[in-house]
Length: 239
Image 1 (spheres, rainbow, N blue to C red):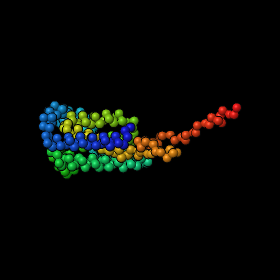
Image 2 (tube, helix red, strand yellow):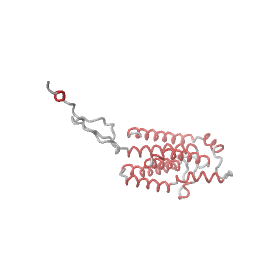
Image 3 (cartoon, rainbow, N blue to C red):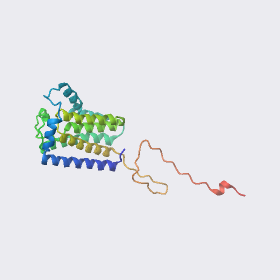
Image 4 (cartoon, helix red, strand yellow):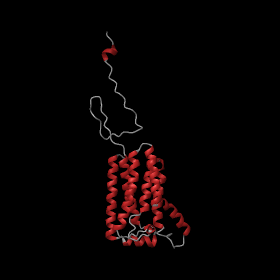
């Protein structure tokens, strides 16, 4: 598991990559890539005669809805709180709030293919960047991994499946999905960084402290007291 400085660096790298992509989307709109995606990468989009496949793909995407993601993250936060992992329990809901803010602000400021999703909430945005579903799925998967680390591989496969389904159903353009992944990973790394154990200094009998990179762990064994070396005069006896 990555330590706190590594997680902080990763969060900054993902955030910087997201900002760079957002600027490029606003500046260029990736017309050729988007046109290619609409013509060739959305075979089961609505109206193309694959209703069953479209329904299956949308079922894969559905857990990324804002309402369901909120319920799931809050439940996982409660589990973390009960187990004494208070920093993580607060970090994941905070990351979800950040995800919602990022999505709304970007949709207000960045002009890309119109998305009708928010019309159901009485709102109209001129952009589909970034994919909110992709962002929230990444965030939910990160929170689930924090509670159940053994689910890492199936959760990664689910995230990949959601990305593919968002594309082939025509819900989002490739740059929307990439933006959701980058923003989601930045928030996941931030939440893990906030919840990472604090470095502790272990003092020896002489008062010198150990390396500040050492981290406390609930599974670490208790320190042992160093035994003094035996006195040769006593062990050998008098002759």
